[in-house]
Image (tube, rainbow, N blue to C red):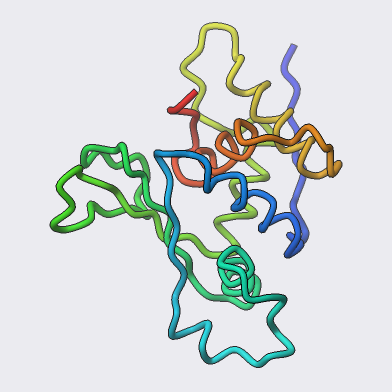
Length: 161
């Protein structure tokens, strides 16, 4: 039997983005930056707070770019929207993310449109559960879940278990 899902993410809330990023701050493989010049040009009415995660979410939601860094990459790029960080002694790779790419990653996780190298499609099932927990505002949405979603957004696959 073959089942195909075709769910679209219509919008992402500020709260959802902040929730993912707050948990990702606990992942040693991940770091993030936002376009400070773009953020500086935003009107006060377009912002939601002064915490770092708020600024990243505001940048995304207002059409700007943010940059996710895979600190463990050792120069291995998993996506065409990535580049090796010049001069980084550990070979970090940067992924340029906008709200479209962010939503597209959540859609891929929900619909099972990811690269799954497991024999039993377990990565596909895990990704779907993680996005469902985020969408349902499940209090058990944890660092592992956020990490899976960011990996799908960046790599289209789960690399770091």
